[in-house]
Length: 250
Image 1 (spheres, one colour):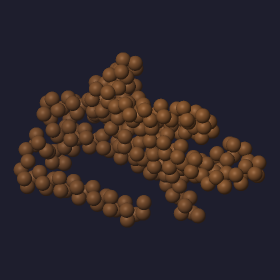
Image 2: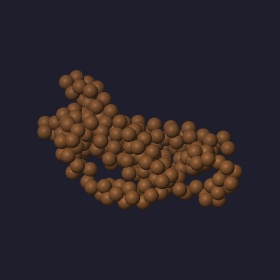
Image 3: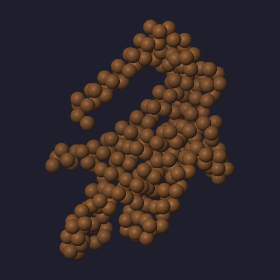
Image 4: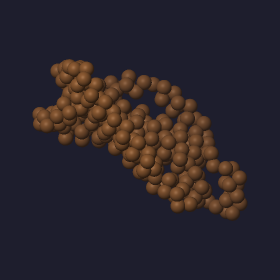
C-alpha cells in the first residue's frame, strides 16, 4: 500500500467515528441502544472489568490458533506436493472435515481439551487452517513445469527446487490465505469464548449483554476488532518484507 492508500484508510475510519458520534447525538439515541464513541471509550476506565486480562486471553487464543494453523497448514501443503498419494487421500478428507460447523464442535472440544483457552485456540485453528492449506498447495503446484524441468536437468535436488523456486513462487498464494485466515481466526476464538470460556472478550460480551451494558459491549467489540487489525497488519508487514519490497527493488 502507498502512503495515499494509508491516508484514505485512516480518513475513512475517522469519518466513520465522527458519523457514529453525530448520528447518536443528533438522533438522541438512548445509550442502551447505541452509545457514542466517547461513552464507549469511557468504559476503559472501569477497573472492575479487568480489561488487561480479557484482552490477553483473547489475543492468546487468536494468535495461538492462527500461528498453529500457519505452521501445520504450510507443512501439510509441502507434504501434499512431495507425496501426491498423500494429497489424493487426505485432501478429500480435509474438505469433508471443513464442512463440519466449527461452532457445533465446541462442546466436543470442551470434553476433549477441558474448559478455557485451549479449546478456543483449537476452534480458531480449525477455522483458519483450511484456507492456508488450500492456497499454499495451489501456489506450490502453480510453478511453471518448464522451469522445474530446467532445474532438474541442471541436477538440482528436490530441496533446492523447493527453496529456490516453489517456495518463493507460492508466497503470494500463501499470504492471500494468511490474510483470509487472520479474519477467520478472530471469529473462531470469540465464538469459542461464547461457548467454552469464563474469560476473554467474547465471554465478557455475554456477561454485559445480560446486564444490558451496551457501552461495555461496544468497547469489547472495538478491542476485538483492534486485535484482529493487529494480526492482519502483522501479515501485511510480512507480505511487504517478503514480496512487495523485493518487487520494488527489482
